[in-house]
Image 1 (cartoon, rainbow, N blue to C red):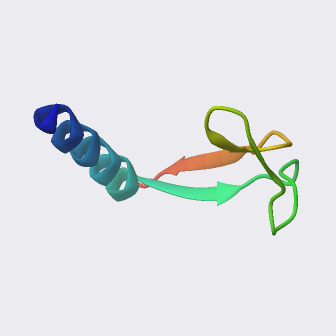
Image 2 (image 1 turned 45 degrees about the vertical axis):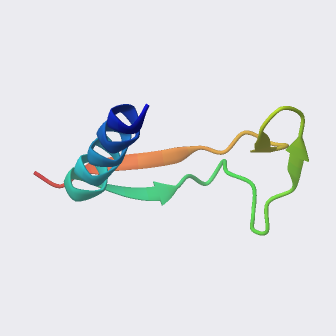
Image 3 (image 1 turned 120 degrees about the vertical axis):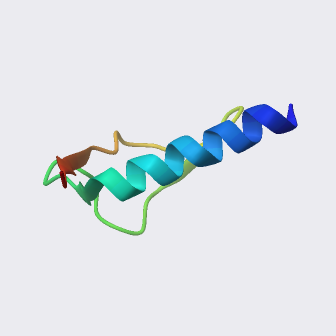
Length: 54
């Protein structure tokens, strides 16, 4: 389990290093309305754009 957590952190670090993330015009405005079913998630769809930095 610990190895999987480290792998997820490495993948997130690589994504943040390689891409620039910004919200789309179709995304809901802040603050987000959240719902709690099994996980905490936004009520409306959150659209994120990723621009390649390389």
